[in-house]
Image 1 (spheres, rainbow, N blue to C red):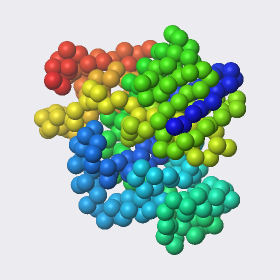
Image 2 (image 1 turned 90 degrees about the vertical axis):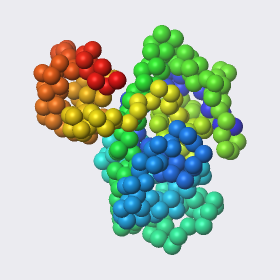
Image 3 (image 1 turned 180 degrees about the vertical axis):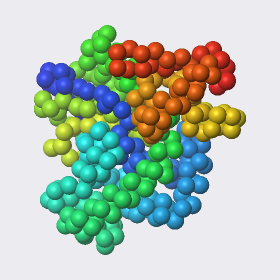
Length: 318
């Protein structure tokens, strides 16, 4: 069991991540590739196998699995806090990991499984080894996570909206209570089933809760108690959007169809660009065409443009 001990100061410093964390999602997605017994990821696994036919992508995943094997310990430096600001920021932070920390975490890995020889350079903090890991993570993200990003972002956004509403209505205690039934809140301790028996004392630092699409069943916490506390927990996959219908991609073009599909979540233009990985200018072009065709409606509120499906757009999506 994992027991997280709160003080009054910690309760005032509970935060929910504003968006999916790209490095956490990448590492957890990579681990799910070989876990065939999870129906929620079956369709995703079938879809990404095509990308893994590319030699470089397949090699990157196999390379990373030597230091982040499925359902086992992986080093904390793979998921730096800066990843909350995006993949580029996270990879830059990873490349800057201090050598003494790398040495400790590689040494901890060695207690759980045999490591390949190249990890000696990683333990020493060589830039070549760190660049190799960062490059492999980028390729793994592009292959495993990026094609699924609309679903990832949608499900995480739904979960975050729920937690945020409960926090507004009932405070932090309502937020912590909402984590049931997987978690049990008995003040001042939050308890959850965990692979090892562990106590995490927050000591006034608070904790960042990270809802995750590729986390499954058991939450994940950083192994190093001295790092800022993070708890990654699985979001529900109920009512997950189906894959983009082929008829829409043929009719509208893949990107414009993806924009229409994403508008079902009532996003802003900025959120559309973020979710789909396209520029603000491209979002403007596609939403203009969809609006002129009567498929969406848009409303400006200050500097923000909000989009909604029209009945015709909803009918087209089915």
